[in-house]
Length: 567
Image (cartoon, rainbow, N blue to C red; front, side, top):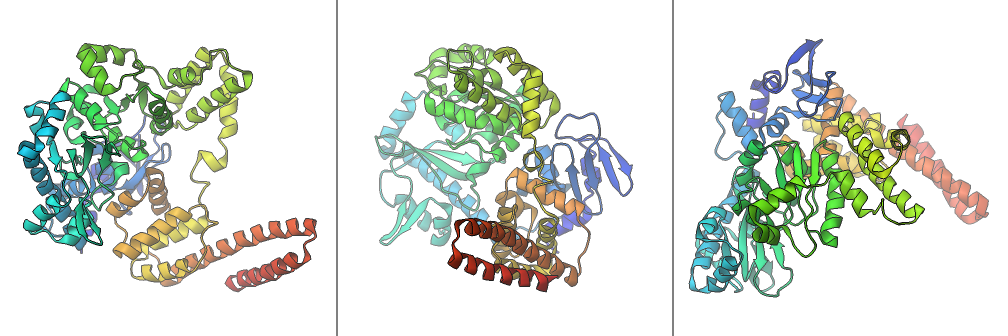
């Protein structure tokens, strides 16, 4: 029995969940107020037999590991350690080959950070030291942040790591060096290096800032077994406790923005690593706070990023304010020029999402009726993504007041948008898809047979194609489905679908049941192809294309026969 199964067997999910909300027995399950969103009527359900939880209000769901990760602000390995310690379970030092590779990459990253640090302090790092000094970072902060320098040479880091005894395949997997026809070369050359750490403070990757005119200006580590761009936040390891203490987080885009704010006393600041904000990053922040101050550049690119980030943040029912500063500045230069007091004032004047959107869509300026209508509809589209009813109503009132539109009209538009296809993922998954998702995860010994059967099908017409194919990929790569693999592979919404499916479907399955589930998916695939084919036949009939019509009718006959065979 592996460590995950051992913890699942011994740990009590009701006991753990009771640390975060009061639970009451209801039949074979327990119910209570959801610890992930505000509610008056209990919709949070815990099933001790299956070891799962699900909120029928906000959609949060998972097993004992995801519960601890979400509420304690931990990554999966840390959640594993948390539960193992609580239930006196010893974790083997080397749990799997995957864990071994991940540990080795972390070790390589640690060695690389020492190499970059020594390079910065050496003769070749003089130009980088001058750049860092110019940006206002002194020696103490260099040590605290672990800043270094990658020499402007082809393979000095590679040689250093090889001399340390690291395997070249693992060096390649780390993303620090690139294999070419002529051998390995360093990915980062002539750059100031910033270590990217996970929530536990382990170095999972690097960001490099050029000190010349080289493009790109910023270069990050590629995706690796330990570094997932969509899940990381620069500075989260140093900021997490301050975020809890202050009750809010300041979210910026770049390393230097985060570092400047951090050095000026705003230690509750993190950066989204220069990528578009993801729902996983917001979920990570939600473990520590329910209030975000979004502080991106005021130029057109920054405004576009802000508009993209707003619905992602609001969809997780987080209070949001948007910091506005004059054009020509960025968060880094602003705080260095205006100081702590200047930023405190900017925070106090931060705009609500509705205020920001009205300003940027120029709703109250002299624009055409069509432009005004488009802008207002865009704002309503964003508000539609808010699940928490009180927060949604607050923003509707604000939009009504600032834009001069009746609340009833806004709510009427919102209700039209809340169709079964968009308002709930319950409607976006068919019974056959739910059954086969359950079978893939719970099939265990038959998982390979399931993969083989489903790989022979064209799943393109299924609503949950990406989810099913993602689960198949995990089986093919890892041999089994575990909580950590689900977390790495899928968005929060997909994870919710998985755990809700596991909660609702039955217990152990027979071989016959699994094969019936596969048959049900085959039938669903064929029925959807049949429907599309029927639409194409009607189209060709109207066009009078006899040859094509004959082909389609023969194909329809074959699909119909295949459906009958499965019945």
